[in-house]
Image (cartoon, rainbow, N blue to C red; front, side):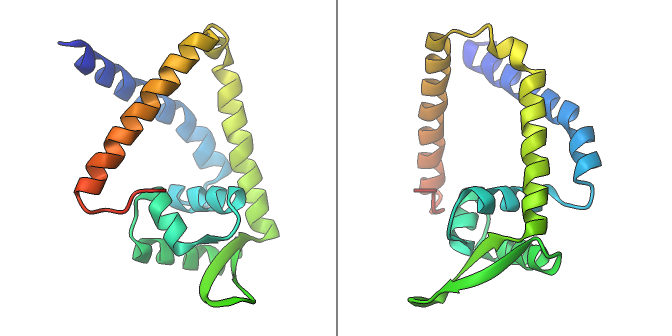
Length: 156
C-alpha cells in the first residue's frame, strides 16, 4: 500500500471514529433534528443574509433540497424568512430564539469534542499545523476543481 492509500485509509478511519464517538451525544442532545437541519441552523447562525443559494452551495445540495429543509425549519419555529426593503425578490433566513438555542447546543457539543481531543492537538507544533492546513487547502482546491468539471457550482 502506498502512502496516499495509507493516508486515505487513516483519514477515513479517523473520520469514522469521530462520528462513532460523537453520535450518541449528538443524538441525545439534538434528537429531534436531522443533521442537515442542524447544519443549516449552524450556517444561518454564522452567516448573515443566508439564502437558499448560499446554503445549497455550502452543502453541495440542490436548491430544491435546501428549500425543503428550510421549510421544515420554519415550520419547527427554528428559522424565519425575511426580505430586504431594497430587494423584494430574494428571501433570506435568520434564526429564531428557539433556533439560537439549538445552535448553542450544537456549538457546545463542538467545544466538548474539541476539549476531549485537546491532548492530541497540544502535541502538534505550529509548523505541523501549518503543513496539515496547507495540505487540506490544496486537497480542497483539487476537489473543487473536480466538482467544477462535473458542472456543479462550487462555493466562492
